[in-house]
Image 1 (cartoon, rainbow, N blue to C red):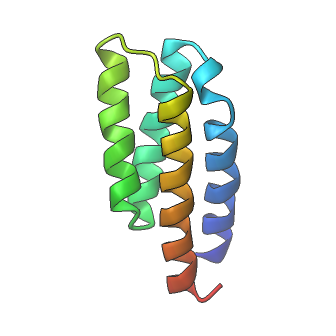
Image 2 (image 1 turned 90 degrees about the vertical axis):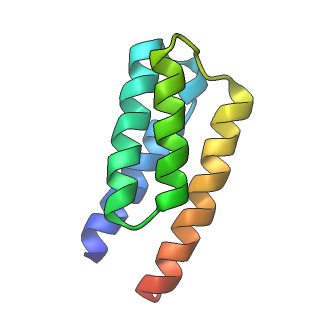
Length: 88
């Protein structure tokens, strides 16, 4: 499980890096992937945010810097909870 967690952390950081600069489909795919992967680790608040963001993108709304920063903050908070559970 530890290996999967570390792979997820690396992947999530890459997906969230400069996500606001990407095109609509790249943004949607990033948040879709983060939503489902986050659920695997019990990151329900982060996953719910990703789902809502993906729905916004599907309605034609590109995310901006503020929403991208919010995603990163929520990811860090959720990741800290998981790491505490895993005993890191």
